[in-house]
Image (cartoon, rainbow, N blue to C red; front, side, top):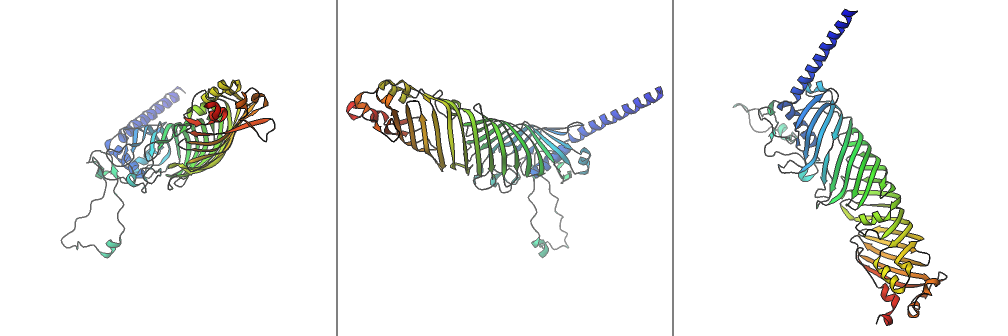
Length: 477
């Protein structure tokens, strides 16, 4: 029994030694300049854009790991990076490297940072897309070498004129640029590596989508997703996003959704998340490769803190309190925010409108405390969106003794044009000075009297003739 144990120990030691030797040999092999240039070359060829790799290593538990990987927007020497990542792990059949065919079963991208601008046509295309204009096919650039079979030299007896068959032969595909490496090694490298990628994961990613003017359209932080890859241009899986912003104005957190991406569409059919302390649910569908990148979106929300939403959108902090619920459904073009169309509704619960200078001043002048801080029993708005314009179909703010209502338009630049009405009941009207009281006329709503006024200017600097309408020309003079 003792001899058997010693024999088993010796065998186990030999096996471990062989595995360690194999791991060391594989690391020496993949870290050689030739193999690194070969992998770099194939990735550049597959993606159609220069790929740079800082280092390569192999471990039995994580497979092949590429550290410090970057992908440029185009082949130009000074092109900014489309992608940079801390590491790129490939779980592959390692022995397939020796045969010239790299079979990849799973890839994992760790801490990628992607900056994705629109091209001249208003489309978001991958750097390797041959329809991508400047960033399409990788081209020869400074400090690169190309792999191409040498042309046979013509002998004196051969006719050097092209034959009819040669004239009909389709042109050779464009030669692929490889990142700088030892020129002597490049011609000897195998030219084909077959990649069979089945699954992909991204951990702690960041994606920034820019318009043609390099302005931020959308940003995604803390991105994690697991996907099944049907081919190099099609993914299907589940995404989780810690934080998302649209035009750096509206923010969502803890987003989750199944997704599908291919060359025709990006589809997130079941989005859930949080915003301003409330819950958000919706769906998003975009055609990123079509002209102007058209999209459709639907959104439902409830429990959102109104003050946080208003301040994020550029409004004054502390002006409005309460919780928002509502919905929106629309469509548009990601290349031009002015093309948005749709309709929606917003309801404010437990609302208070305070620190609004015009109402505060009017309330102090008329000695109506309710105007200085409106406790809203009803606050809701219905609207629809057309290119460049938001039309307010109905806006109602109602407190115990008065009501503010309005209809009109707000442009995407923030210009206001609202036809409004201030209505008060008998209790408030009885407190007014007689000349002011007579400016409020009876309306259809029993027990209420109203005065019309207009609101213009901009969202951040509104202008109105309310004071003139309430006081009247005689008192003003």
